[in-house]
Image (cartoon, rainbow, N blue to C red):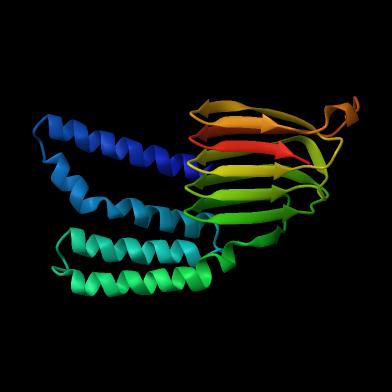
Length: 218
């Protein structure tokens, strides 16, 4: 389950539904979107907490910031005099903790699962039986280091990028099948094919890049 793909898909469907209801005069689409757009920020934060509980700082800050904005846009809090100080505090927490807790980390287990919004992550696996996983990023980035991992048969990764980039590092000798759908984005596999043998370990990377890039390298 790629959280980034699900999140972006749900947001697009929600906006389209509101616009359709607005065209049918069921509601005022501009008013609804203007009042409830912070829900997208809250949703990103909540999904980040679910997908990456160890990287709790940035998702928690996104969630708190989204709640503060929602209170203002829905007129629960009538004045910016309350919201602005909260957002300043949230920004300060992001500076203190958001980047620091999104840095390099060694993943335990045989799979990698990562979801980032407005942040970056560096993950490394040393698994002797690496199976693959899901990596998603929206307005962010991820670096996945598999150079000390050993593949199991049929290992595969699902990568989704929107307005960001993902870099996957693999050891020399691996066969990487990079495929998928680039939508105003691109893929690049720069692994050394001349060092691959017939029975080389194989990793399938299924990628979607929307205004972003996916690169596999040594």
